[in-house]
Amino acid sequence: MMFISLLLFVFRIVCLPLCVLCGHLYKVMRVYNTYKVDMYNRQCMAMQGKLVVFRVYKNTKDGVKTSPTFINRFVQKFYGQDTTSHKGKYRFHRRGLMEDIAHIKLIRGVIIVKVSDLEKVLNFLNAYNAEVYIRDVTLTPEDEKNLNKENT
Image 1 (cartoon, rainbow, N blue to C red):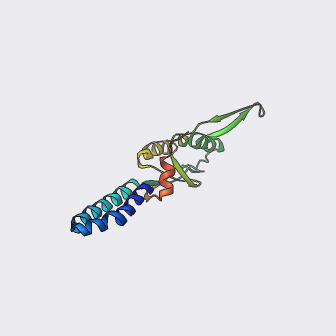
Image 2: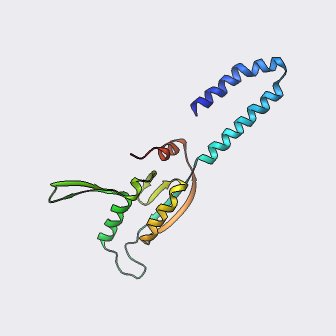
Image 3: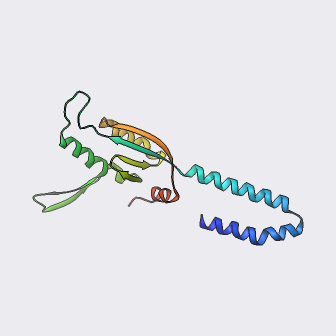
């Protein structure tokens, strides 16, 4: 993005005055404006994400209380968890679904994911009968950079 801005700056300073002298101002401005609009459209299309808000009920719809073990299992499988066994002798990490999906966790139960990863997240949340709300969001350049990072 920085390279494109630099290229446009050089174009305005160097090429535009030379073309004015040659009498090609209209043609150059048409090409420049078309390029600028095309770059704007690419940015707007690439910066879409999905905001997912979810809640796993403490009580089921039947009025039966959900056990803390059920909630803990959900968190383990969704986010992943460091665990120990034999009174801290062995330490290991249980991988969760979100470790394989680029996401931004805003607060508890609110995440932003790419449109392409939304279906995986929804399938998992539906398996746990979670209450889910989804909205389209326009990502900031920083958010887009975080979502496009390779997972390590």
